Length: 277
Image (cartoon, rainbow, N blue to C red; front, side, top):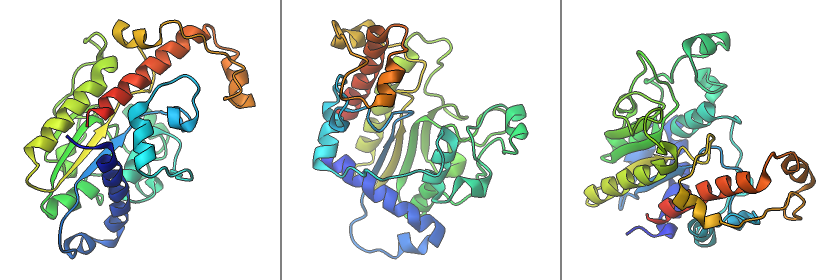
């Protein structure tokens, strides 16, 4: 079983290794000794304050709290863009997403063309998993992709991943959100199942694995069991834990108790699944 501390150290190390992408693979191949394993957990659309350790007054996130407590919390860690695809591009290439003309979320061919964007990240771009693959690592991606999908888009295998199961991408699919009830609500468990299986299968060699969740990005639809964690929750829009702007925003909610229960239930399940690692 992997400790949360181990995950934290691996993630921090993985982010440091991204710098080697731009400098060439020699930095990866020249090191001697033990090669660390990397697990990169990326949640989707989670605000910096959406965790217990960050001061959220209602959500319970014991696994993330422990990750922060025993690991490293980077409080001035800025990304090169505010949306999905550019951030993922930067993480995987170690370069500014503008270098690849990905400055917004990848969408339909028409919408991409209107914004002078490609339909997917160039598979020939320098990629962290490909460099690690060449260094003898087993590599995998499970969960949201959003670096290009649809006709002609390369699957994750073309970017250096040995194994993948994805949403918003081509190649082996994690499931169908359009037809499977509560798919999004249960997707984090599926992603962690795949991640744990991959880690166990490769325990005798170095590995790199992306575990990229769909949550807590909308549309949120937690199961009754997940919602039961917050039965009776009565949040206050004027809670002093929230700043002035957030209090004003929450004050406009149509049904703050219901909406807060849905949000917190989704985040707590995500936390539970991360804690299984």
